[in-house]
Image 1 (spheres, rainbow, N blue to C red):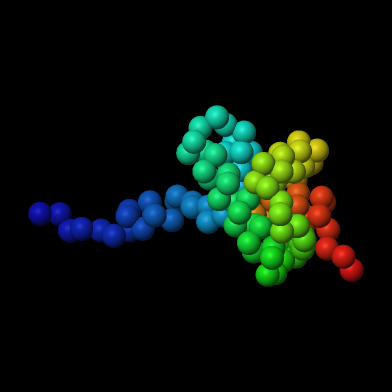
Image 2 (tube, rainbow, N blue to C red; image 1 turned 135 degrees about the vertical axis):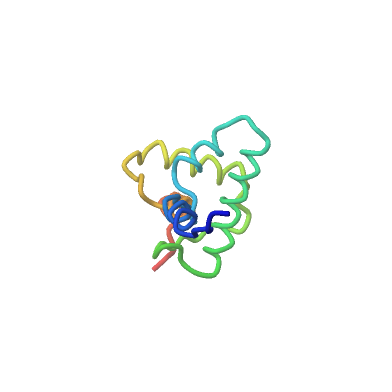
Length: 109
């Protein structure tokens, strides 16, 4: 019987990378596909950002959404902002949504 070596296993584990935060590519795909699963993920990010922004900033960005804003308007704001800002590639999905909301609904100073 050969002795078991943990070194190859550890090398395999550290060779793979995991992304803890969703990026623009996924957000864009989820918010533009005609799939109920993708739409659910998109809606989840839009609502999570809305909820977080009602209490604090996201990645240093504040936005003040009106209480009666609808989900379809939130979706339109984010899609329009993503199209208008193709250079914003390295941000998290929540950071992108926050920036889109802030561009449309900045907080009063």
